Length: 346
Image (cartoon, rainbow, N blue to C red; front, top):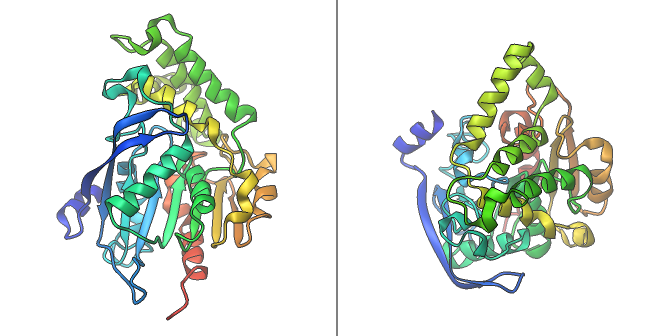
């Protein structure tokens, strides 16, 4: 619904593609033309300093695209008139990360010959999109969900003077380890270990893709919500079949494989002190990808000079890992972050 409203408004989403010639990945591989697809809402504004002062970068999760932020649960709460990121005042940039959506990815034709990319490659490409492609020289805010939240930590370390505030959602400031890493290995191995994968040169999607989706479902599940949705054996079977079918729709095994392998280089822990701007990290207590009992966030946020951590209790409004895109649940914390990071008047 909100997308239809935006499309009829003066500030409708504007899609675009930015091409980086001879992009060199940290693996040492090079792609002659790396395409980054993106959407923008609103218009950039230059302040008295001459710098862009209203740009907001919002980064999606694994397997997602920037388009996911046009939902009622996100855009309908944040982007409308008078809302926190009202697009008549803010210039919102929604990129598709490398390997996702309309950006360059294995399924475009290179399959398993596509260069190995990591999260640091993805962040560096986002920086080039902004600075070279969109001529944005400063960001009011960087925020992201899940993988995008992980990218937000890296943004704060790699470009500490480029933004005024950071808001990572559903993420942890440490390398992927423990059950999180093992779950990703299950997804990766389900695809790579399937003879039908054929080294990435399959003609039909391999059976291993279904097994990978089974693992993904449990990674992002919410026990409370699933029990409410499927309180009987018959309802659970029906719900499971619907979820698998929905997840498999349009999914490509090589793309999914690369997306989950990309997290292997993620480890912001050594450089957390480099983050100089106000940061608010938000997780939910029913997030099985980032369980609060691990204590990782508390240890990491203590090293961020202006960092704060918010743990949202389990409620009827939370959705496990998916709480990250239910903006109504955490928008008050975004409001507080914007207030405490407000630049001083010239």
